[in-house]
Length: 204
Image 1 (tube, rainbow, N blue to C red):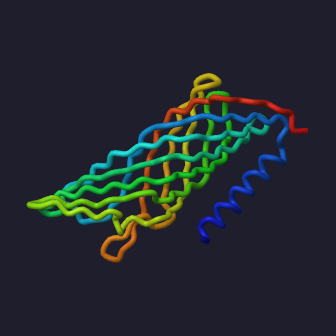
Image 2 (tube, rainbow, N blue to C red):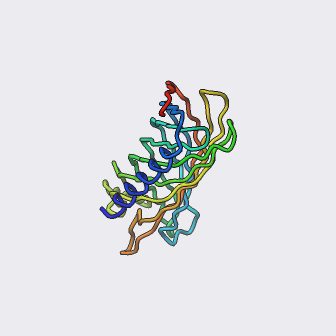
Image 3 (cartoon, rainbow, N blue to C red):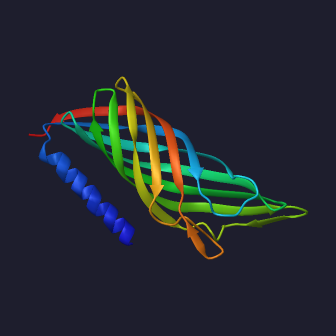
């Protein structure tokens, strides 16, 4: 897909820029998990959608030198919404494999700026309407199988092993289609990460 090619090119550029000034390589591997807040205006609902969502997975962070680094992860992410459409109670659920890749700029030992891209691959989805009777569609035909976007955020390090990650994810492709019209999804994630294994090596 064109979106995937763009992500690969940009990721390669990140790696090249980091490697050009690297002296010390520090690699960390660990786990992360947290919550997701979603904004997606897909329907003329009579009540604002309420989304309950979260994510969890693994990551690898490579710092080359004291300033630049790169972080790549793989997460299981889910989101769900409840809202009223007229007199009908609607419930939607989606789950994804979320793959973020970002460049880190370490401002201090305890804080870093983060910018990059993410991909979402749909695993499952459902759409349920409830009034006098319940109607369920599994999978939800409106949930697109693949979407991607840009991310930016901050990382706060609490020592060597624990960090707090705050990200804003801006959708660059449609993630949901209803009545023939596509919509993007913007999310805010807050997660707690744990560095399980860290290694250092002199690059050159």
